[in-house]
Length: 142
Image (cartoon, rainbow, N blue to C red; front, side, top):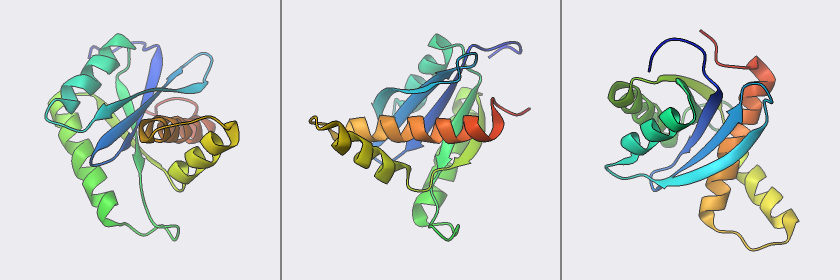
């Protein structure tokens, strides 16, 4: 993507089956769930399309770790996924700790008292990742 101003920030919650995606407008700074993608052979193209549609040049990637901060097998998978995504799409990747975002998403969805599916958890977890990033940094760091 060309250098210059972008309108939005995208965050993803990487899973081996599904990828939760959230978006925030840089001005409003409000993170909202966007979609859930199937983690298949076309996922990098789908992410690139979402970035182009939303005028994004940086993707915040949730980095899973144990509660004590130690890496897990999922940490390694996520780093490998993000490296491949950056190579295939050209979009900058920034990691954001995602401690307990999926549990937080489940609690939120249960509290709403409505039926939900796993895809809802993934997209909401991505929104929490993005909220945490925005609270810490405001917008992507150079």
